[in-house]
Amino acid sequence: MSHFALLLLVVTMLFNATARAADLQVAVAANFYRPMQQLAANFETKTGHHVGLSAGSTGKLFAQISNGAPFDVFIAADQTRPNALVKSGLAQAESQFTVAQGQLALWSNDPSLINGTPAVLQAQQLTKLAIASPKTAPYGAAAVQVLQHLKLYPAWQPKLIQGQNISHTYQYVSSGNVDAGFVAVSQIYHQGSLASGSAWIVPSDYHQPLNLDAVLLTRTTREKAAQDLLRYLASDEAKALIRSFGYQIID
Image 1: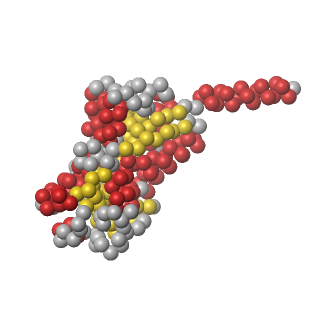
Image 2 (image 1 turned 120 degrees about the vertical axis):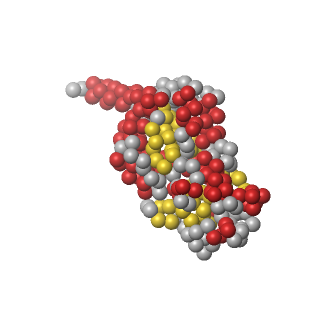
Image 3 (image 1 turned 135 degrees about the vertical axis):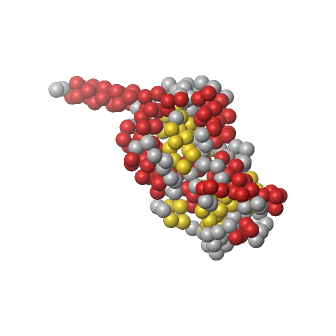
């Protein structure tokens, strides 16, 4: 084979590989951003598809999708918004499934502030408490439900500092601007243990289930690659990684 023919073959192979690869755009709830970064990297290595991630509160991402944002896949922190997209014809019903179930934690960067119970809330030792926006973030709505369950919401309502999403709430607490707040366990746990500070893991029956549902959006032009991503998220390999971030898997 001549050098020219060999070069032509290599160029053709590279072109075909590029043509087969897809640039997926995924809207992901802020609490799932960290695990999704690793999952996307693993998926890219396996398939060659590039995955772009846009993180935010589930409510705001839902509004963007409803208004025509060009996402291929939506991973929400609830089932309500994916259900609504399916009902409106913006998502494929048969594609929807629960990726994981999240957990809520009361967390402080101070290692001695929280003793594994809600005592710090009941004693009202804090001047401010951070939560995600209950209107747009399911973790924020769950935090309100926890305070209501403890019969503490009226006392804490004037002291609540709301982040736009759970990432902003985490930043308020990790920076020390707020002493404590309700965050996702996935933000504070690493390989099954608390990475820093002190926390109370909220019992799951104190609030609505934090099921993360994924769904394929009907406007995608990269359906095959998007379906491959959803299949990967349901794989045993992906489930093991998701569990390592403090999520539960519902089989």
